[in-house]
Length: 214
Length: 72
Image 1: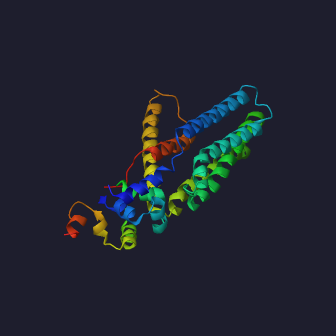
Image 2: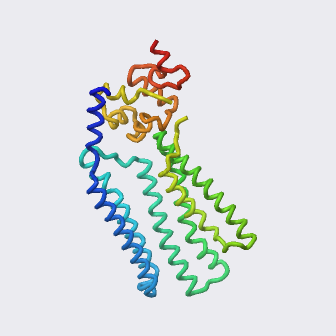
Image 3: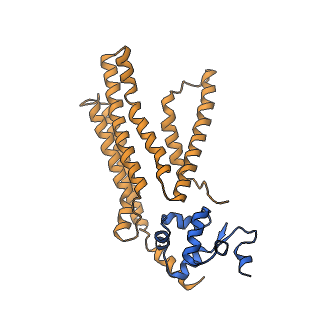
């Protein structure tokens, strides 16, 4: 190994935050997730005090807290001069995706609450039913604008591979479950689960070594 | 595809971040290139070659007669 290479590698090693930091960070994440689940459980099992908007506020507040905690390692690295800047395509994606998802949470809660109390019919029922889907369409638009706007070819390749993998996995599950459902051997699967299912598969795919080399 | 990127970068005394900035890509891209997890597009390969003042086939080896042959 050449001496110059050793120097460069050592400089990169110093960006490590240490096992103690990561233990604390993981504990913080787990505690926040636990508090999130606990708050939702308490909210739903105590007659939803304050109505559906309070539920929406709980979801939005904990989501923002989780995002803040997830960003702590990179914030510290940035302060030490090693961190990666949040690149413009991701900033734009976040600014599109998060408001859409928050609007979705509030509209879903409001729609369910209104439908349960007012039992609307006709065009009002249509409007109430479609309301939560509209912000999701904007969230999906944000997801598919990301690879289009990503100017780093490696990152774009990773995103596209993850999207393709998630799409394939979702199609496989939905096709299989669809036939099982048709023959009445499994409970009916609602169509709206496809997007969260795709999003979960996409999250899994981003962690997989899908490879870009031949 | 094999490449000499890590060695060339080390010879310049650059970190992965320095090389990423010089190429206008992310640090993860440089890491993926160096570890052979990602093969660059032709335009990026030419940018890399130009930066180090070499030919593309002097840096990247498709193992069918790349830089090892060019060095002869």
